Amino acid sequence: MIRHSLYAGSWYPADAKDLQALVAQSIEEARKRATYQRGPYRFAVLPHAGLFYSKAGIAPFFTASYPNLERILILSPSHYANLKTDTLASAPLSGCQTPLGLLSCFNLSSAQDKYFSAIQSEHALEMVLPYIASMPNPPSVGLALISRFSDPEHMHTIADQLVDDVGEESLRSGKTVVIASSDFTHYGPRFGYTPYQHGAPKQVREDDLALSHLLCEGRVEEAFAFCGSRHSTVCGFAPSLVVSAIAHRMQCTGWVADYYTSQDVSSSEDANFVAYSTILWR
Image (tube, rainbow, N blue to C red):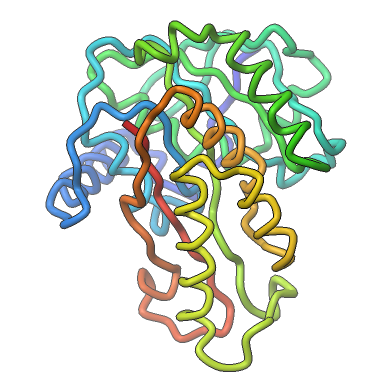
């Protein structure tokens, strides 16, 4: 099974030269930011909007070189398939197609054919793939979906399952890294989320950074409660919890490498906006 580039030509350039230029320029810009810290990075939470919006948040992970890297596991929510709560979904893949070349894949032991359409249709898995394909020696890629947890105990169960599956030593040595694909708060009438009458961008920023720091520190039970109490619209909350838990177990140090909103990118004052937080662990 090959996963095709469903969003090339719409969410990002389909032309290889144009896409390579976009990737290279965004990585160079990331190296100039005040928050830049040298990698390699072991775990990450990266955004997944169209690359016009998400490139600034994805690029920081790829400022580093990864001489020992063999595999990248990408976890995302499912935006189009209705997955059961506490369900980790993956499909057996032999490759992922990108405009920059075919990426090889590795598969989780739980991979099932029935989830292939969900994996194929998911944009949150695809946005980071051109960046991986642009690496000097692209690693193998694994793809999986997890949309929601009923409680932190199930989150720890999935985290344990993934550590066993990819190998704890591989994670500790940096041969395997894990990326959670997540945009942060979706705010406005379009998203059915308008808790703040005044100063929404500032309030949303405070909420998102509070959550980001809980994730940085591996305080996943508090992060779970935080999102529940605010009826959060952070779409990749479940994958982010899993990555935070595993990074904490591996005694990695996390920090917020970037935070911005779609308003910052488009210079729009639209009442509807999406926020993006980039979290990296070393």
